[in-house]
Length: 569
Image 1: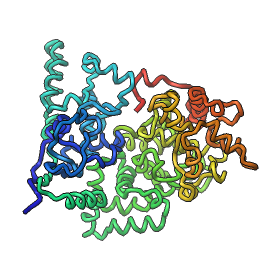
Image 2: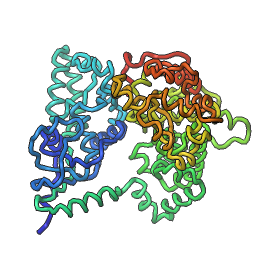
Image 3: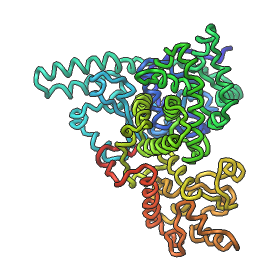
Image 4: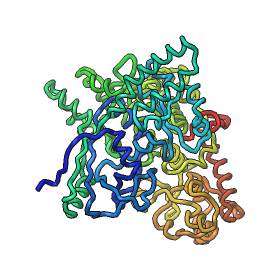
């Protein structure tokens, strides 16, 4: 007897509706939702272009083999009986459910004005943290209509929601203006909204007769495998008859430049770098990469690979991006490689100028969240502007327009990965470098592995919760985080800072004050840490980290971004 019930495509809107009404749920043991909002945005772009986005595997769960839970953000089960358990596709379905149903930590919008002006979909979509005043203000339809911003949640039921929204926008307009706007929005509906509305995922449904041991084996296999056919593989096949073996090129690059392998770089980024470098008007959209010619590969492969290796070395050595997990944006690698490939490697002091400018661009892009939305468009713009800047021209917009609100640091948790990772790297590079609480050695990637060093709370979360000192978000914010080794973290447990720090301080010969200062922590005997004053500690550390951000970016004054444009993403 076959374990397959059917293998039919299902409309995205129907799959999301099943999540909302709890017909479709998850096994309790499934890992939590971990996708970054930029990954969600990229998936939505793929759907808008009608690109394949993988398949879904589910089982009709009549036997109730596994305990079940609702998708993150969906209404609670509350005893409702579900029909399907999703075995593969949780991250994709959760991200799409949250985006189209307007739940979770971020809200997603389409800038229809940009689409009307001819921009690509990926340039028009963006996300903003749901807790900001900016988002709260745009729950008002009047402001949506004025700014032509479409909340993606309008589309949860399909294109009909957009048509109703469209009519609400255009009905108050005068005749000529209404006709013109109706025509423009109708084109958007035909080109983009209907594509999303009609999008189907291939869904494999296992029958209710599937045995529990088979389900366990399937689930284990899915979590161990699952390799998709990438653009790199497609171009490898295309160029093979022309004596271009991209796989061999890639293996040679990894051998020649170990730093590329150390950072677990996707080879697709090399192709994007080539696409940015080889064109008079830089561009690295998927279609541009797929249209690369043999001559582009031959002319630029070695230069871009060398540029990538040089750029990663700068990020590792100067910006203290020690490990791949601490790189704020993988999507910054193609423009980084392309700029260095086009600029060459000067043998004079000019190389140092390039290095300093590259570092400033990196920090401004990270703390300005420049690569949070439309990274391909941002890459093209940065390459266009960085190369002239290296030659003495004006700074790129990413640098010149950089602004930052230090209050955002109170809202940055590990889920806001770009700024969070940027702050951890920043702390690692302050002064002579952050030092290990256990060995007092300067923290390196090797020491991280040996000592089990990772990001942990300074005021333990359990201590804060027990004493009612802060909300969950404030307990987890980056101001309350630093890199702590496994041994010290076990010693800290849930104790008050004054208690565990006194134990470290009283160790004969240990350079207590120097180690604290190396983590951007107050070292004085009467500091907020030693008084267990969490609010004062947050203020103290926010001030110090803001000073460090000013130093590395060149920005001189704080901005009120939260009230202006909701950029606390």
